[in-house]
Image (cartoon, rainbow, N blue to C red):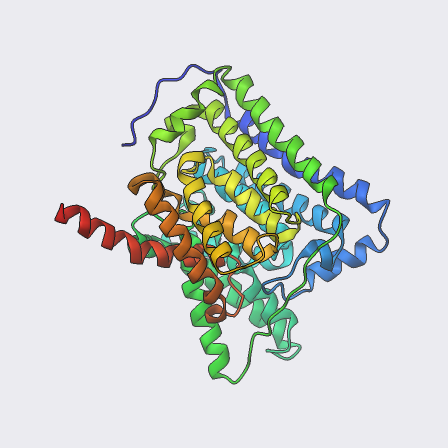
Length: 422
């Protein structure tokens, strides 16, 4: 099932792959600087982003402006690239997925203030267990989906000043400390059929946290801040980035496009690392093609590329290095679209757009059981994701990862029972 394919590609080293990945935050920084000439109070916008509770849905493009939002994403990108270089990380598919997911959500909930405590908590866990930080850094990168807990405690009125900053930072340390053992246990629930395993873990942690807050007679107030303006320049930037990925892939492997269909041989279930199985060339081509497809899909559906949609697009692209491809992703997305049409939902709304894109977290179900079951999984995903947010109060950014875990944990055992019955 996970046989390595024979591919011919240029010799690549870690510096080359890091260089390719660094193009994204560099592009974000340049774009943010260009946008600063058309916006006022860029610094004030960045401060608003840093001091926001960042609860779902807090779109940084609207809250702080395009310039501040893209600069925020660039800074987070550079910070993580530094850590990857410092800890001499091997750049594999899962790490690429973590990096791009983190970048995407930097438009939609994550900033330097609310992610640093999680990294420090992870470092403390590594020291306590006497393991190297490089062994857990990918999990910590994904754990930033819970960063709104930190911002909520720091900047809402749940905890009064001056204790709010201390409590927020301390809870962040605690989450960073416990997220690694929690995530390894949660994987057993969905058996690898939910690619956003940390999203499922974060949903559990967020539910527990929100329940404690509610018992104390407090409430996490819902937020809806969305950018709904002109987005053609953002789409243009994305297309250029994804074309660059395709170009980089073809530079590494000139047969990358022809070999793209090799990804279809894999169901996508964790662990499916395309950088190992097919090489970096095919992986980057797959990432670029999936990226262009998502931008086109959003445009066809009439959606706006805002913060949440950017998060969804970059998560899809990131996981195109770790399990996702056209064959296992499209049936699940189609299932969400069919369900939304039946329920007469607006396909152009941000909520439905991101549900369609993020639903690919359960693409391995389609890859393992076929397109019809993939469509069914997509239908179930929409039903769950539109109702699950109230449980964790919006403090888990990976709402679809939580939903995907529940769908996979419910559906896969039933499918396996029928298979055994045959």
